[in-house]
Amino acid sequence: MTHRTASIREQVKAARAGYLLPAALIALWAALIPYLRDRLNLDSAGVAQLVFAFGAGSIAGMLAASPLTKYFGSRLTCFASVLGAATGIVVISLSSVFLLTVIFACFFALCAGCLEVGINIYGASLERQFKLRLMIPLHAYYSAGEVTGAACCLLLLNFNLPPFLVICALSLICLALALFYFPSIVNFNFRARKEQSFMLPTRQVSCLCLIVLITYMTGGAMVDWSGIYLADHSCLDLRQAVIGYTLVSVAMMLCRMFGNFLQDKIGTLRLVLCGCALLICGLLLLSLRPGLILMLLAFVLIGCGMSNITPLSYAAAARQRDMPLLPAVSAMSVAGYGGLLAGPALLGAAAYYISLAGVFGLLSVLCCISLLCIIRVRSYYK
Image 1 (tube, rainbow, N blue to C red):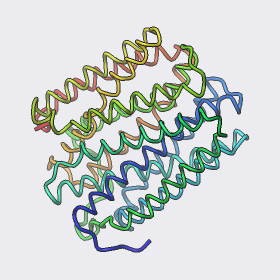
Image 2: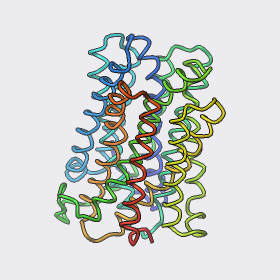
Image 3: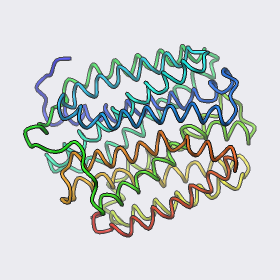
Image 4: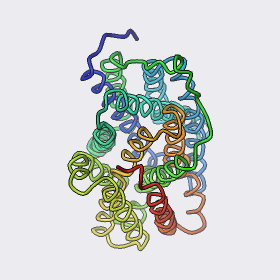
């Protein structure tokens, strides 16, 4: 993929596409989970094994993203990741063998994890380089990718199209978008700056890592378990169960669209603290197994709560000077997306013993810990 000379506007557009695409691809995975459970005849433990393999691949991809970005640049790293993820999700949609599904779930997650970290490094580098407030708008595009992917799956699956046909079509669209936008990605020369790919995070950055880990773990629970929870505890069937994840994504997107406005009105710290409080309330409500209307309201609260915690935490990481940018953002990305992709596997194992409702209650307790961490590093949220 050849590079083309890009203006700042084109570089930002490439970053927007880079945030949108991994979210859309993960939304396809979320829509497939209930179908894979029925096709492969899996119980909660079987789904947890599949999600655990997914998480293991994601961690490998996230760890690989920093050195790959350093030596090959953001452009090639991100494009190769999109290509691999699109291929992997198509094979998963066709597979009826559990072992093959596990292998390609691991491969898909490896590519998705690499893309998530690679594009976060690029977005934070753009923000620091050009002194722009990019993280909330860029994460709004991530939410737009979640909404678009989930909504397209919901619409097409309700037309009774085969899941593999839906996944193939949407994966090809993702690949076409990458081919169009990614040549504008500029490679920041991390090798010339001699920045380390890895280093242990400082105490303050460790708090930021814990905040995004818990937030993304909650997001991962929405990806992997919301559809099953709705299918088991409401009148919705498999084709409609993705509506919970869709509501979370829509709420996140809308709150991120107005994120900079809210930041100006109430301040960064208050915005993050209010988001954490809403997240706790939504999880507690969901754990009570309410009726369908209140259950859907809980998903909206969760989406609103999660929306601006993560982008403002990445902005705080770009602002701090305790660590170089590359290892700081890499550490936060590994923590965050480790929570998103590996956390639900652990939650699934817990659900085998305490039920999914109990898992959502456990997440609300973890979010209280996140609230304490935000207070601990409140000076970074300026």
